[in-house]
Image (cartoon, rainbow, N blue to C red; front, top):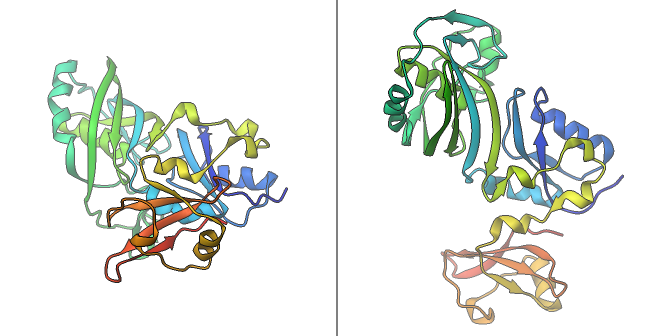
Length: 294
């Protein structure tokens, strides 16, 4: 079926599916001009996977700024090549954290702006090649730490050797690396055994739909405007809408709204359909169309 509408599909990705598997499943039932996912989930992870379709793919960069929340389970006492259960067991130990307090003492070191070394089995590029290609070919590569941000780590339960917690973090944070690093700080070994993305920007796990309902795409399609709930909005008449689609610029005196130069304004037509954004060009002092939705 040809699908011309634009928007967001919030899929609850099942375990043992890659993010690209989800794309292929959706494409098998529908034809899109453009489609892509905003934020890869590992095959053994489940949870929120935003899929952007058609003109909404122009908004990928906004999703990179969103905080994400994960429900994670870490098992102490072993390590694997991938830092999760997908890899081979490399080492085991009897050194398990003595109690919950010893774990709690280490948590503050992982909060705020921190440096994190990504796992070798990851899609990050190094010299134009994905890190997992180096790992699969047993090639040595220097893993450089990256700056990531963690706003909250909340322990849900501790039943030795299993720790369950919720982590709120920025894009680029690897929960697998966190599992490894936390265990290492406790003179132990650790591996991520369960992971679910339960929050993504303004979205929660209850906003998702199951892949078994892939034929109900239209019913589950969310407007891209939902990520701009706090932005000011303007309604354009037919002439202004035409000028907007033509890429013409607008001046503050012609817009009936008190605007700040750092605003991005939601634009609607007379039918209250979201058609894109206006953004301010500070060098030329006018407003110009951005990420038009046709």
